[in-house]
Length: 442
RNA sequence: GCGGGGAUGGCCCAGUGGUACGGCGGCAGCCUGCUAAGCUGUUUCUCGAAAUGAGAGCAUGGGUUCAAAUCCCAUUCCCCGCGCCA
Image (tube, rainbow, N blue to C red; front, top):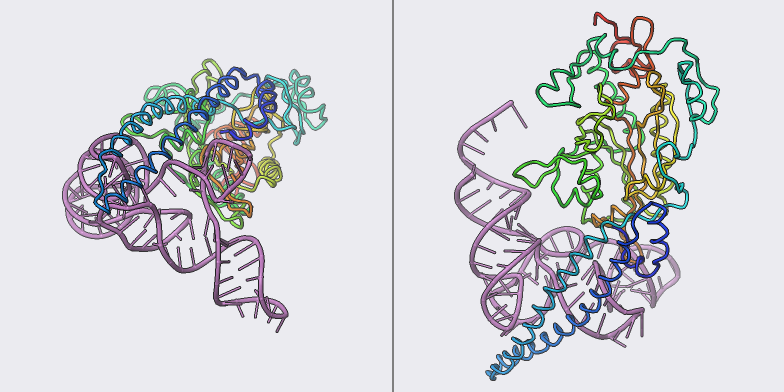
């Protein structure tokens, strides 16, 4: 949620921000209309309550002295009548206003590029030694800042779907039979590779001062609505029937709501936490996209980084989260690029968002594997997470970034590490897997 | 699931219908050669330019009453015991 006082005092920055995001500014107009009415009503309502409190105090005195209170009772009754009428009206206005204010997106950061579309995101940097099929070279060059760090492949590499079948690493048909499309059984060495990735990421983040944890995989409405935006709510989430519970779409949701309605001491910040959990996404609106294999699925495992910090430090932590993720992919030797996401494609919580996109040789494309956002105080405001300062309590800033979304990384490993007759295991993972390659007979 | 007990400000705790007591901690100030101690004030949210201004707030949502932390109903969570259970 945005800062309502700031909105009242500096309308222009919110109009500018909404326009840059491609948001309909009618919601701002509507907000001001309702808010003005609300403030007027509040004055009247508070005056009525003030009068009532005075009379009630008088009654209390008279009762003590055995005085007659019939008169005063009548007065209170008529005031109560007015209060009830007005507060019903006020409640309606307030509900509508609060519904609308939750739709207003976070203020855009000055370094977020004003544009729209994946293909227009701002290129930041490329790293790695990509294996590029000769026909994809033009695309690669264009999207890697014209990098010369690549090796040309004369033959088109196999896609992950073929590799899964060939090496007997997943059963997608039977998962479809029992659960539907976009589900999977992971098998054998691919499953062990996933466990290795999880353990590797957990150790990695522990060494970088994150408290690693397994969160609840379901949370209630009030936590979820504070942690997400309305679009996520409508499109992505699974609801548990008969209970006030939603399956989490990322461990960011329980990690941030964990501290809801709390006031932290300044010396507790920053708080770095990491969640390891499955993520459940309905993927409504993604029909026809990435329908094969395990690239886009309803359930995947993810290790997430999350930071609570003071506002003045939050862009430093943003860089830290991006660097952590980068260091993981450097160590795994998966080629990637980083992009600054277009204003119109940002979620409403984020002030700025960087994606890391891995190179997928058989798709011949960079695809998203990491998303790092600075939500500034937007999410903390919705969930009421503050810290104490000399000048009163202030909202913390919250930041989130993927460390490893295992299914996408498994695909990246399969595609980037396919060799003549086997799939190589990235060196840093071998201590975790206990094997250094996947062969057909495994 | 059943029975019993509970939820009060950052924390602890008092308060059985008349408008939330006290302590700890935090912050600010005073005092002091320094530190400690001591003393004073302050500590949540909303409206307001601000006020020694007003309103709200005792787990949540309703109800009774001139008046509710207090009485009634429902719900949530925690603790103890019993039952069930990976």
